Length: 354
Ligand SMILES: *Cc1c(COP(=O)(O)O)cnc(C)c1O
Image 1 (cartoon, rainbow, N blue to C red):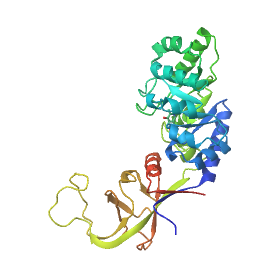
Image 2: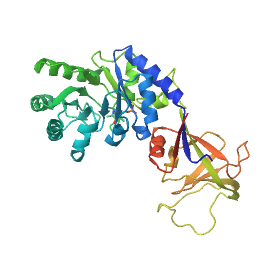
Image 3: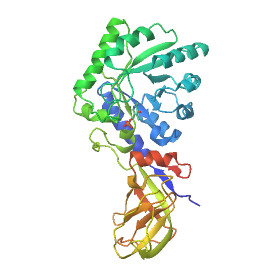
Image 4: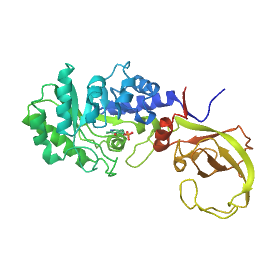
């Protein structure tokens, strides 16, 4: 018996996206880190990323990177390590992104204990205001990192368009290039990685406007959804529909479209509002806010209207559809980054790869 709700993943489409985009990057001497975090550490996704040509695998969580042990590429932790997780990071991660000296000091000590040299990318904040040290502090940090025997500064990096919505440009990534030149010269070393951001940097790359020293991008969304994320444009030559959600109907009845009786609060303590469309055919689907924020879902049958959801129920108006739905039928949804992230995190939602 097939189990629902389930996220259905077309691995061949994702693999083609990975091949296409890693080629594009290669043409600009850029290595790709495949970021698997939106799939909560699924080895299937990590595998096709490696088969498609990524040079590194990246994830925000050690727990996920641990799952990728059998895949023979360096593992990059793209969220700053927690001090409470230093041991696991040294054990399971080859390269971590960092911005705090006290954390790097702990990594150095633990790496020594485990007889390892741990590689780090020093993150620089160029305006997006999430992680990273400020450019004026680079030399101060370098002076402290440089003497650490069990830490190797593998490179520097930036993250943009995540918190502040700042778009990668020739100017801000040019600043990263300048900082890399300064470090190499002053400390007489070679940075192997100058990491110029995430899927939001692809637009700059495709316009051939990427500063030449940028040799690494960390791509997640673009590989899965075929989309750059500075402007949200679909990337030509990619597939955009590699994933979909399937949910089962558990009730189907004609009912009023406006609730009947005195109105108080809904399940989430809010006063609800309704459009009165008269008597309509309504379907209840077996998924809810515990699994996914319903406002991030898009139903593929365009004649269906998403009415709302409670913890475990999603309500649809199916009156206008050409298809006649029955209890037990499956309704399909398109996903975006936010909904996929939530769904792959819910233990109630199955994942099927083909
Ligand atoms: C999530 C993340 C990425 C990947 O971002 P996408 O938009 O999915 O390409 C890259 N770097 C860092 C630090 C991230 O947190």
